[in-house]
Image (cartoon, rainbow over all chains, first blue to last red; front, side):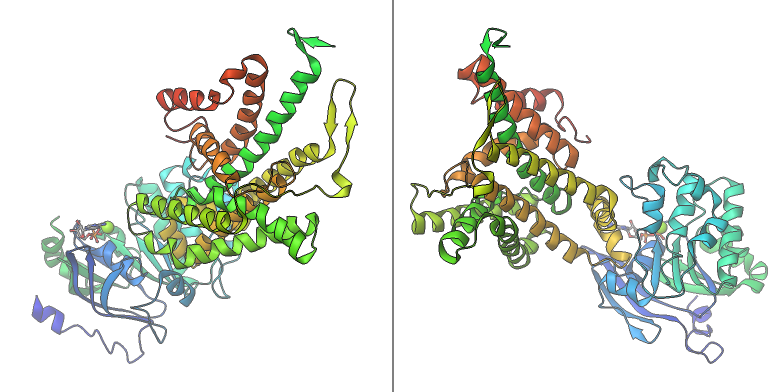
Length: 248
Length: 294
Ligand SMILES: Nc1ncnc2c1ncn2[C@@H]1O[C@H](COP(=O)(O)OP(=O)(O)O)[C@@H](O)[C@H]1O
Ligand SMILES: [Mg+2]
């Protein structure tokens, strides 16, 4: 496994410097040491997934990038800036947006208020009309309480609201989790559409069949580390290895 | 219409009005407590002292600077609110990671210190503060005499409560506030400066208390204990209405003021305890309060 990692073209992929470069990221919840040196790159315009079993540290990786885990070390370099010590609002303002695993829809806000909540951090976000074209349900249910939406609609809302802000890098934590297959397909279409519109996506997934339909590359996490990287075109050839990692 | 239920109409309406006046103070004070509690998760035990400071700042503005009531209505909330901002930044903000009990103890201690300082400088006998000329006098309504100033207090506090509610429910800033009350970390991860939002919210709640203090100055005498007496009842109001419920604290404030006034008519001996009896009943039957979410 260590050999596989050593072969990875992590630092100097295609010469261009990555939009997001995570190096030796460690994180703790209280006394428990959860991330043990996560290293990964995401290039501009890429969709990259983080695969791994439950408890591997995928969510913690996204939360650490976003500044939501207070005790962390290592390096998170984004668009020329070091963010490891920054506060989460400064990280958001640098242009990273986060869609949490639990979706984080606010019960005391209606759908429109939820959608409009994240402040615009820089120019270039999607206009509201485009967002409503992508997610027509949100317009129909504009006045509903946020948490009265179905699970799928809440997931759409959680993604939709971070598209307005001008953030370039989207961190999406298991958007397909617990949703019906049709909805999962719709989310897949949305992610491909976002890629076409120039967004960069770091996507946490457990479902690699879904991941395969949207991503350019896949990192595999185990026990708080990245242990492998697979290009999407090599995914089928690497099936045995992945089955072993993911225990499916 | 001389008597209603055997009670002389002027007495009944007089007590109803008094109930509404007290209710206006309960509403404004519990509203500030509810806003602060919602976001900071701290019961602000300095609130009574800050109400008293509002009245004193009005008195100082008049007697030291010659600035009258209308100036006080504007400046006292700003000045006392700013002192709240300083207290939050320098002291309360250090306690957010600890148990909420520490915040309660801290704000209780600060309240005692502020009261002590004012008692030291101004004594406890009370200072007079007259309403402005425009609000003196009264109207004879036939069934009762309505002092202009008391009418003004009820109307003004209703407007303040309504404006606060609108700001929280209908504006972008209010949406930040409601969202941060639910999940502050996520709101901050969207790029909102939540620590600043918390500071401003505390300052706003304190400013509301000070505004109530200015309104109270011409009614009660301005003295260092004026907040202590009132705030105990206000805490009961907050418990009855439900911690953190905005609309609940306003409705409960006015409602309990009226209930208290009516009790004074029909069973005067019980009027001082009726709110606490209601609080006990509500705590037993609906611990989250009448408007609180369990
Ligand atoms: N808030 C928390 N407090 C303590 N431990 C946590 C917390 N959140 C996650 N963990 C632990 O951290 C490890 C990684 O969790 P997580 O990042 O959620 O994994 P994944 O998203 O890959 O399922 C797990 O062992 C989990 O039990
Ligand atoms: Mg997870």
